Image (cartoon, rainbow, N blue to C red; front, side):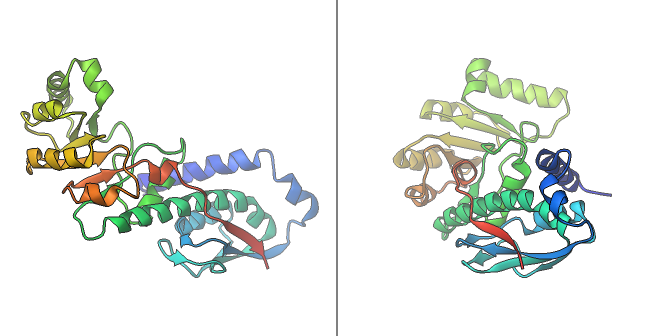
Length: 283
């Protein structure tokens, strides 16, 4: 039986191919005989961390199970200009059909993995783990969060259904921290749901209110200065996990980690990347 991940991946590939091919790859069909065979290689044109090799294997299999793929470099490997990640042999029409979806996905996944590794390396020597966010490209969140893991980061919640995360708008609409937490606990009990609760705080007053409640998995310290983050971690004092987020960049991330937070989350590793340069060339 296929896992949910495998089923979701198949759906992403199906939609991607439908979007690209539509009624047919007329450019290829018009000039290439249906029985033509070819060989192509994935060529690296920019330094970084390669990601999406396993995605490409799933794509090639879905496009044409007779394609033969020879992988030279696996996911998560640091690559250099001129490296050949894999070679694929089979029907020329199948290679061309898979080319753009494979490249688009791998270029983005590799960019995310590369940036994630850079940020993760800046946390080396601390206890802090790097988390992604839901700030992803609609429709391919699975691929982007997969790339984060390949780059050495960790996934935050996948969507709105797998964790309770009480953010500023929830708190304001609910009438404050106490109401939001109490109503959430009642909701989970009535519906027999076992979901972790994370509460975002904007100041020390909100932090103090959260600390009065039991059963909170993590407090998200949002947009605090480094000095105030250090104070917030001291106030939490191991009562629950801590997470820093908001305006954290490569120049400040190590300083926030030095405050002792358990996690740092940033959307930059998924929403602010420039695709890594790869090409798929016949040879």
